[in-house]
Structures are given as structure tokens and as C-alpha cells.
Length: 506
Image 1 (tube, helix red, strand yellow):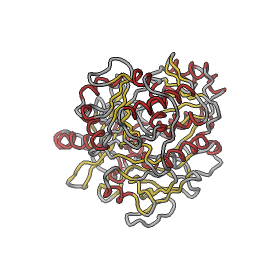
Image 2: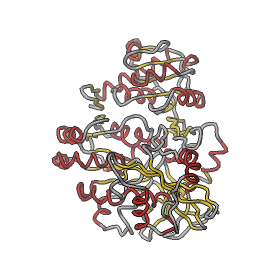
Image 3: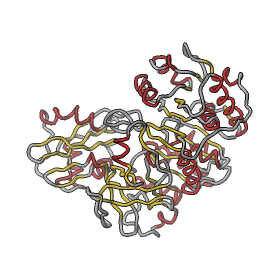
Image 4: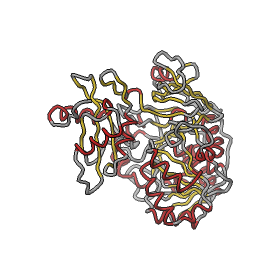
């Protein structure tokens, strides 16, 4: 099987057959090859894989639409990309029905029931189309996918990804993540994030493996699925790591076949990483990348977890560059920095994006002479391992000292009462910026502001501890599940001046 969702499945042959039918159905409706087609798909349907395969076979550019977006957000993506057709699953039918751009589309296909007014049934459209393969004039440099960035500070940017970049990534990932042929992926994610396409789903299709979508599975269900299906791969998003560890403790037999566990979705506290490795041994794959560079840039290997690579701190590093990429650390003027000094991370890779859609100025700002200036801050150690310290625009300069939010967040997360933490700077007359933190406590916790601050003080230099500390029920996140720190700054700037959240002496 190529894909399973619960009791539903598709063979590789069925996916190819229905992919060609989709390509012909779009052509029959006047959508010419090379056109941009929006795909807003959920993990609850096996047809989602057919859509991306069909768009590739037909020579269309797939505009990936996060299924968590609201109608106005989807309208923006369709308008900005110039998409002339839309395919979506039933889980987002309500959003599609509220959109204003659907009236101008050449084709609007809905998978499952109900079919929104104005849309056509996906199954009916495919039933009326041929599955005959036809030549498709596509070059490696043509755009295969458009993935929109999360837009933490404004409108998202459309990242243009060529066929060359996608193919290079699909060939790289099985090597980097240690996929076997004809394996089985227990995939707790979905189609929300474009990186899941080239980082998990397409590479498994390429290696003749099954991708089983198990989004929402309990730890017991997750573990049982891995044992019963002899899973060779699973993904541990940061928030799901505790659940994965519980799944493996409940069903240790899963480790008999599990070859790699990919961590993704934000920094993993080193203490939790150490606990995970103690449980799964050298199966952990830690990596670093972003939408603009498509594939993984750095990686850890099995020997790293045995301490054989010489990393300063293996549970904090994102690994070393893969053979297909290179990375360096530069200062504000672009000059290389030596080991141990923090600067901006600059990348070169054969999976690089082609630019931002209709935004040449922003493209030129980050793509310079074939290098991508990431805006991420970090450093490398003497052994060549890289470490992330945060985003350049998130750097806090307090009293002339640099404070990296990721470091403070990591410490706050060490406290048992804290489940989430976001650190940012707020204006301060004395220090210029004051280190500030928004914290979500575990349900039932009775921890006080002073207790959390005292804990931070015990782990951090005085100038790094939060001066302002806020307890929130939840952190504001965008559709990409990234914390919107600009929203926190706007919401909490006034509260910092009106509440007793000062931390005393630095």
C-alpha cells in the first residue's frame, strides 16, 4: 500500500491511475499545464496523496494551502499565487464555502461530502476522465510547489520550489533519515505543513513504502500501530515527544523494527532529548532546515548519540551539514566568524528555493550570490556541529548584553510546572529592552510568578532572567503553529508597566 488512513487505503497503482485522471479532469476544465492549482488537504483522506501526484503528473504547480487557515487567509494565498483551480478535502469544506475567490476559479473540486455550492465532486470529476498517460513538458527549473511561510509578522510569502529542488530532496531524505525500502511510516502529522510533503510523504512514496496517517492517535494507539504494522519510521513533533515516549514504553516491541525517529517542530529541550535517546538509543534523527531550503541541511547520525563525534553538547546541537549542503556563521557585515561565536547562519544547498513569488526585493535580501541568509542565529563548535540560539529579529539587547530567547525558554521549560514558554523583549527605560516571558503552566499548578522567576534565576545569569513574567492560558500561534511573539509584545507591553512583574536586581 502507498497510503492508509484508518480502514481506507490506496495501492501505488491506484494512486497513479487516479493521479492521471485528476490531471485530465483539470485539462478538460480548461486548466492548462503549468497553471497554479491550490491544494488544501486534510489527513483524513487517502485522496490527498492522489492530488499531489496528479498535479505533478499533469505538469501543474501545486500551491500548498495549510488546512488550518481561515477563509480570508486562503483567499489571500489564492489571490497572491494566482491559482486558477482549487482541490480540497471535506474537513475544510466550511472554510471553502466562505471564500470569495472561488467564483473566479476555472475548476473547484471537493473531496468527500458535502460538496459546497459551486464546487464539483472530486470523485465524479475523476470518474469522467481518462487515466491515459500523456507527455508533460516540464523542465527541472519549472516550479513544482509553492509553499507559503507562516507569516509571524505579516502576510506570508510564497516560496517557489522547483522540480529540481523537490527531486533532490526526495532522493536525499531516505539517505539522511535512514529509510529502508518498502518500509512503513507511522505518521502522526498531516498535510498542514509543506515540509511534510518533501520530508516524509514523497520520500516514502519514492522508496515504495507505506505512509499511514495516524493523526490524533493516543499513545497506546500509536504504539500498537507501530507494533502491528512493523513500523520503520515515525515522526516526533516537539509537543508529541512525551506521547511518543509513553507509546514506546507501553509497546516496547515497536523498537524491534523502528529504524529512525525524526524530531521536528521546534527546539527540543536537551534534557528531554537525553531522555528520548535513553529510551530509543541511536534511532533519533535531529535536523535543521526551513521552507526556503526545502531539504534537511544538518543531521545527526547514529554515532553522535554514542559520543563519538566530539560535539560540545550533543543534546543541544542540530548536527553537522549533509554532503549536499554547507553552512557558515557570519557577522552583520557578512564576514565569517570562528567557532564559538554567535552570528547569522548562511546556507548553500542543492535544494534551494527559487525565490519569493512576485517579491524580488525580498528575494534579493536573502538570496545573495547563491547563498541563503536565514535570519537564524547560531554558532558551530570546533568539531563542526551547529547550535541554534534564535532568530536575529528576536535577539534581546538588554543593558548592552545579548540575550537569546531560546536559551531562556529552554531553562523555563525545565521547570515541571511549565508546559510552554515564549521569551521576547519589551521596551525598558533603564535597560533598553527587558527580558520578558509568557508562560503556560500545567493544569492544576499552583506555581507563582516569584517561584518561576526564582527557578530561572538559579539557572541563568542575572541579565538573562525574565524581568517581566506573565502567566497565560495559551500562547498565540499562527496557522503554522509558530508562536506569534509580535502579538505577545503588543498585548503585554501595557501590562508590563502596570503590574508588579519586575525581577529586582539583574
